[in-house]
Image 1 (cartoon, rainbow, N blue to C red):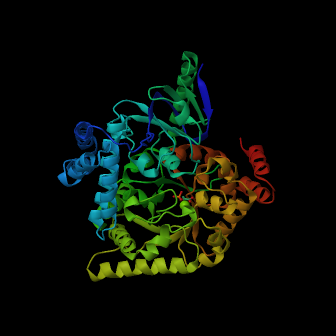
Image 2 (image 1 turned 60 degrees about the vertical axis):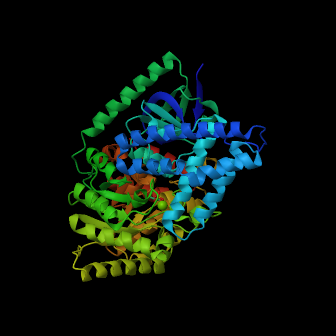
Image 3 (image 1 turned 90 degrees about the horizontal axis):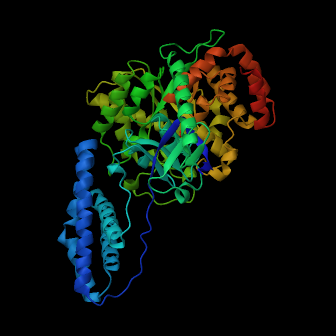
Length: 571
Ligand code: PEP
Ligand code: MG
């Protein structure tokens, strides 16, 4: 009998493969005294050698698959493992205190970590992370438990995890990772969003996957219904191969629209753009007929590494995207770190409510070096295409004015250096905080455009954490309260002759699309993989009829009533 777990359909498609658990093993142990310290030092040496062998293999694999940059991280770890300044004190401690190797390793490792972390030097601080990593690896060998090494995956797998951070997700190898499923998370958590742009089927918030699935179990991830099947019967497997084939056929049908503009049944054009996280996502945008980039989440450039990207590195990425889009609009959002997107090397203190904390523009306005570096890179790249710059998490007009002044100053510094900068860069904001939606009429006088970030706008309006599957029932894009806020933003933009887009996940939602068309949204930006389906839907809708639907929906009382109203008019 196969087992079914229900979760949240986070990324469409069907994946069938063996399970690979990406789960932190239990590394707890007790301190004990040993009667033969020399023997204990031998045990430590054996674990140390095993850790070195692991790292050699990982380094070679990383070099081959991911390039010299990534391999350098493991080279650094190997150096730490061979450093007598770390190793000798551990052996000394075993001998002089007659304690077990686990305890000597942990005590000594923690002392070095604390020492490096307290140094006022970024390079030294990074060494603390290296020591943490290598001591964990030796400890795992001492305790004879296995650490997951996702970079060594060399066959098709489905990743099983409690949660995946955006940076874990960014490092998944698209060739072998066919799908993933997690215990926690919601549809708009960033790992789910990334799964969509990477076209990896995913089910999140399935609560018990790490409890119920062992390494090597056969797993089906049904990213269409939000179900996970463990060790399915032959019959069920056959059924799923059929569903998967039908889904592929449906995609082939949509693919015929790839070179068409998005025009409704009554001749009204809207723009369907894509959300991306890295220049690597461009291929998906072109293959799916994106008419522009509506959101480039630049924070992924800053992840999966141990220091900030330089101005030149950023410039290369922005230039690649602008050139790749060949003159089509590209909205680049400045750094939106915080919430579920962490940058360990910034060493920011833990917060009680990270989604309400020191994030995004709040951080950039305080750490001016980080902000200026990004703004300069963007401005330098601006001459290679149609760049629009967008600030995230704007809560007040003062924040917008300050951010814009910072942009002006970066521009002036470049001009003074004789560097050319485009004169036609639109500057806009994300509307994702209710205060900004409510004051949209005032903002519209000063910004060039709005892009509505419903992932956050809904969580802040409904007071429901987007990462918490227990309150995911409150993620209600069609709640009339949300629809009214969206209407305020679109109307305010149009009144000032500006455009309004949406880059939250709601923009690609088939129930929301008819209402958004009726409300007059100009640009819909979504995961590239949703574009063709949305285009096929929009071509069948009439703008005039959807205006009536929107009018009706705004005056309904509940989420459920709105869904019913949409169903009545949708074919
Ligand atoms: C949003 O909040 O809707 C959005 C698009 O930004 P992010 O999902 O990156 O927070
Ligand atoms: Mg947001």
